[in-house]
Structures are given as C-alpha cells and as structure tokens.
Length: 493
Image (cartoon, rainbow, N blue to C red; front, side):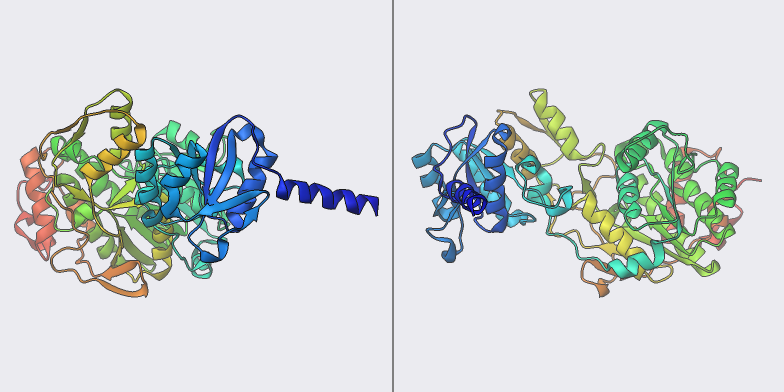
C-alpha cells in the first residue's frame, strides 16, 4: 500500500509541479496533444536538454485550460506574440511530428520577427525510438519549410520485388544513391550491392547503414560505369536481380563546358549498365532521371533524356521491367542551392542567385527515394515515371528564408542565367501526358526508344560541337539509328 501511495504521489507532484526555474531556453510548446505532453515529460526528465517548458499553444478548442505535467495551455497559435511577451519565452518547439510546411513556415516567420529560436520535434521516421523525446528536438531546417507530408507507399508491393532479392545500386555514394541504399536495406534484400567510383563515398554510405565501414566486405564495389568490361564482370559475378541506376554527372554549368564527360558517363555509362543488366536477366531496372530531361536545353538535360530513351529501348529487348523515374531538385543534396547558400551566409555573403524570377521544384531526398522505390513496383515496362514535385519555389525566396533563419544581415546578388539554364523547369515534355493511374504522386508517360547501338557507335574523338549535334539528333529524331548520323563522320570506323 505504501508503494502505491508513493507512486501516486510522484505522479501527482510531477503533474501539478510549477514551471521549473532551471536554467535554459524558456520554451512555448506548439501542440498540446499526446506528442506535446510526452515532450514536456521528457523535458522534465532531461533538464540537461536546456529546454524549460513554459506553456502550450493549441488551436483545438478542447485543449483550452488543459494542463500536462503542470504546464498549462495558454492559448492558440494566434496568441504567440502575446504569450511570448508575457512569459519571456526565448524558444518555440513545434510538437506536431510530420507537420506540413503550411504549418511550419508561418511559425518560422513569426519566431524570426520575435527574435526567438524555433525548433521542431521531427517526424517519427527521423526519430530512432519513434517517440516524443526532447533529445530528438532539432532546429528547423529548409526541409521542414519546403518539404511535404509523409508519402504513402505500398509496402507489400515494394517488398514483393526487393525483399530476398540481390539488389545493386550504381552511384551508391551520392545523395540519391546513398539514401536508396539506406531505404532498400530496410526491406531485407538478400544482398545490397553498393557500386560507386568514389571510395570515400562508399565508406560513408556503408558507415551510415551498418555502423562500420572497413570497406572489406562484398557489399561495396569500387567501379566506374564507364569501364564496360569491368562492369560486366561485376554483373556476371554478382548476378543482381534488381538495379537502381543513380550514377551520373549532374552539375549543369560544368557539363556545358565538358559535353564529352556527359556523353561518357550519363549516356555511354548508362548504356553500359543497361547491357550488363540484360546479360544477367535483371528483373527490375530503375533509371534515375531529372526534370531537365523534359524538353531539354542543356547538355545535362540532353544526356539524361537520351538515357531515358536508351532505357525504353532496352525494355523492348529484355525480359525484365526497365523504367525511368524523373524528378527535380533534391533538398540538401551535395552541391545543392541549400548547401551553397548556407556556406555563403556563414562566410558573410553575398548570396548569389542567378535571376530574381527563377523557380525550381524541390523534394526531400527521403521523399524522392520513397517514390523511386514505389515506382519500381508500379512502373510499366519502358515508360518514364514522373514524380509530383508540388509547386515550384522561387530560389530567391529560399535565399531570403535561409538568411532570416540565420539572423544575419546578408546581401543577395543576381548573377544572370547561365548557358543552357531555364528560368522555369518543366516536369513534362510538350508531348507528354500527366496520367496517374496507380499512385497519386506518380505520373506515367511513354518514351520513344533509342538503341544502345547508336550511342556506342559514336566516335569519342569527335569535337564538342559534334557531341552537341549528336545529342540533338538522339533526343529529337524519331528513329536516330537510321538518321543522318548513320554514315556520318561522327561514327567510328
């Protein structure tokens, strides 16, 4: 009886205890539901977190006058300014896991005007323990502001083609490739073969998945997809059943200067991977493409559109399912505007934006990869799957938001559009339709084929202008294998 009384007393005193006077950031909690209540309990249990709960704000009328562990609901989110002024709060914590950008962004803007810190309880998928723990609370980032609600995926369909299979990922060390590896690993493939030409990148992805990275195990393969004989040996030896082809050169201005490199990696490298895959009877092949392949104007766009056509041609010849997946910019990928802007702000600026009206589509890497894996389960042989990227975002707005979040006074400088760069990207080409028969965020579109024989016959000793002319031919002509290039000097003897 005494033990029961003591337990009840501890619960009662924690529930009714006044707000702690411990040192730390004095925090207003947005959301007084289960997550908010558990978060306050966690704050009390971990004073070393440096967050002291002052009160809740919640828009649910049923939450008025509620208390959780001695912390009261002080109003709705409309009362933020009043409550901050009356309590002396120095931080806001959004305890709404998975809250949309429509919820997060206005709070970020208001917190910036008030000069207080804003933090979030991340989506449960980000939290190892999937609970409202103060140790999981982090600063707001651009993913929270530009991202979308969690994507619904058909786990059973995905497991049907990944679980128990030998899965190979090219470009496994890149932003998309490494996230592919991390997510695919959760579905229990018989083998996950991570292939990249960058040994440091392989080290990083192996460490992120297994917690060790000795680079001495068969799951990491050092190979350049340009080296067709070596690539074919790897495929013959490992016999992958599912392939995700993420290896590519992706920086637009660099490829404008070096079109031969785009040809050798994005076009010939893709042709090499496709041939190696057909040799061993791969059952599912997913080629990672880009929105720049829609009505291309740049070397990058041309090379990736050609890769889509090569994949479509292989679909006609091979037994397995060969598809492409097209999407726009990925938040936080290496070399992305977020990394560039963050570095520029850290160094005092200026932040460089090419044009005040330029827009881009953005998607989190986690969301993009979820949909890529889903596309592998629902794609029809030879088609391109186009991911719904939401609404395009003005790049200058991203720059302004990052500057505001930094609390610094940094200038923005406009540098002008670069060669091959579009003011506004398109996800669909002029002749492509937006058909969503199997998933609300994935469109299906047909792609005209282009034989790998065409690109493999091109003479690599040709000039840059010859490469550009060949790209034009391969992208636009309906049957380039019998076009003007059939006997032209662009072909090797």
